[in-house]
Amino acid sequence: MTVSSEPVTDLVPGLEEKIAAAQALVAAHVKGASTECITCSFQAEDMVVLHMVRAHYPHVPVLFLDTGYHFAETYAYRDQMATAWDLNLINLKPRQSVPEQEAQFGILHQSAPDQCCRLRKVEPLFAALANYETWFTGMRREQAKSRAQLQALDQFTLPGGKQLLKINPLAEWTTRDVWYCAQEHSIALLPLYDKGYSSIGCEPCTSLPSDPNDPRSGRWSGRKQECGIHIQAQ
Image (tube, rainbow, N blue to C red; front, side):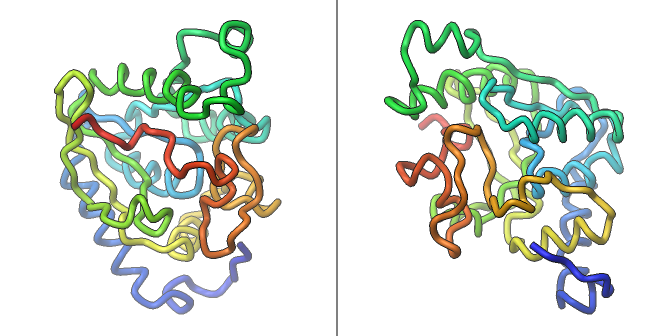
């Protein structure tokens, strides 16, 4: 998305209020304690929320799901921002490496994408989240139909029964809001956006969006919309 050099408040009416509300929500729930964390895929939304959280808790644990399948550009950007922002980066790895998993199960992201996501994303994240009480995310309602009812504050239950307070400060934001907020705060974004990607995950399961009105239409070849990390135990 191309952004302008004009003041953000002139280009996006109401964004100043949205930013203030999101910042206030973050400030109310950041205590600077070891029980707080943020998940970060290094996409635009996550970087905006991380910027807000770091204003109060510079060394907040930043959980990155290192699946082994990410774009080279994602890894390079992760390392760049980890250094530039002095992040307390925690790379969560699956029990098996990519070669080990493929030797045992074949190419799961082709044959059984749900199982691949479970092994490489869901299980490592849920195991890590058990160590925290508060979880910040960059989720937004506009991202997918499956997120249409997303609330700014939510109680999230892990498979073992533990509950966390899940905080989604950008729940009602649009993509435009995110991009102009990033511009306002001089947050450099993942270069893959310049190639036309709108939602960026593992490289084998991410393509350019097939539907301009659905930012996640380039994920999993349209076979699903969620990897499972935001689906809680019932």
